[in-house]
Length: 66
View 1 (cartoon, rainbow, N blue to C red):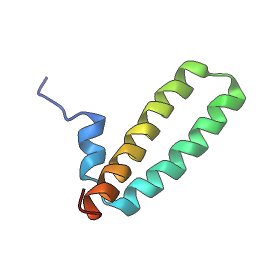
View 2: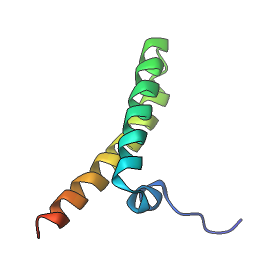
View 3: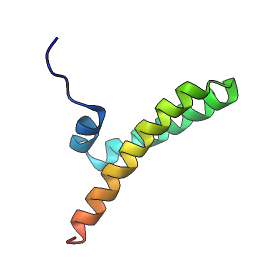
C-alpha cells in the first residue's frame, strides 16, 4: 500500500468553509455517539475535531502576521 496522507495533512489543505462544514458534521456525529455511549468512537471524532480547530487556528495566526 502506498503512503497515504494523514488526516492532519488533508485538513491542512481544506478551505476554511469546508473545515467549518466538517466541524459541524463531526459535532453532530460526536453527539450521536455520546448518546449511544460509544466512548471510543467519541474520542476518535474528538481527535478529528481538534485537527480541524488546529488548522483554523493556525490559519488565523498566519492571517495576523504571526
